[in-house]
Length: 188
Image (cartoon, rainbow, N blue to C red):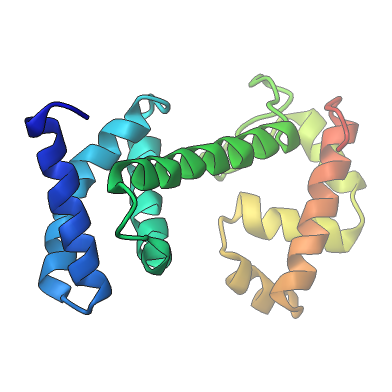
């Protein structure tokens, strides 16, 4: 870095981090406030979705907070910060990829309505879905109906079914899988 203007933030960040490591809360707050737009810029180069980029930027600041004791003042601050940001983006990418591999997008059509919303008042489910629900074992059918058709939370549905929330989740998961198979979706 031969440009004095480019070295100035680096010097200021290093000084503030050293002060923060020494317990200066004001210097630490100033550092984080100054770094937030920089971190946002680093993250937005890799992640285009605004909300996701903001979440990852916040994770970078949390990671910086957790790792602040590892910063060595004799080393430049910028590369240390960029490594933390890069790792946060990579971690997000891995989570995003794993989630995409597990999720199954089903076509929206009459055979598979949006079960996240209760049927409109007086509107019945399509016959194929009604039959698939009726074919489920009673415990699975109850879990699916309580969660998806009645819109209850897991805790509320578990109370109503008289089971633990974990047991209700297992029943619902098995019911969803059976519905996917009966309605022509790929089983997971």
